Image 1 (cartoon, rainbow, N blue to C red):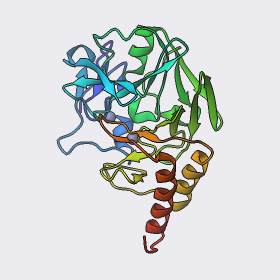
Image 2 (image 1 turned 180 degrees about the vertical axis):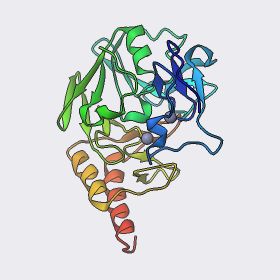
Image 3 (image 1 turned 90 degrees about the vertical axis):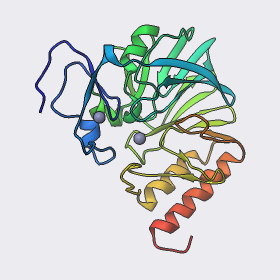
Length: 259
Ligand SMILES: [Zn+2]
Ligand SMILES: [Zn+2]
């Protein structure tokens, strides 16, 4: 067990959570939706991360990722917004690339909070998090704005929708004909379907009611494309119908009915 090292910002190597001081344990990893590795928890000082940011086209947007990949390995997306771009989901390192003006950062759920404070400070922008997940913030900052309720209109055609499921405040972003879904609606290898889970690494499913509630929240929205949380995880056509039929299949499966 490691002790407290003051004034050294560290990241959890497994999930990418940031801590102002090295903690005894990572609450994100000890939660059943993540895991502590068999070899034990490890911490990386922020200054020793040794990653670079890469920006490249990802469908209709630009994506931002780290090389080499770190922790959960998600990529973020840059969505045109009010003359600049909104960052959807977030990365463990605020990096070396100049992304121009960021109008804000919106994050689907706590697994991607990670380096949000560094990004928000670097670009002096607001981080939008759903208030129902506030207990999972491991590093606070005045740039963080907690929103409540079922939707948040960010203007310019961008809408945050609280779906719940994987996390109580689990949020997706609807823009134009796209749904940016993080881990809340999961893009899976069969692009004709999507998945849902309470825990992805530990394979703990959601109740049928939670998944049908996600589908009901999204039913009013039209979209063709679904962007998942990693590079190239994209459903390119028929997204809205795929979410509805996938939720119904999932509900049948967890209820023990023929799928
Ligand atoms: Zn962790
Ligand atoms: Zn997750």
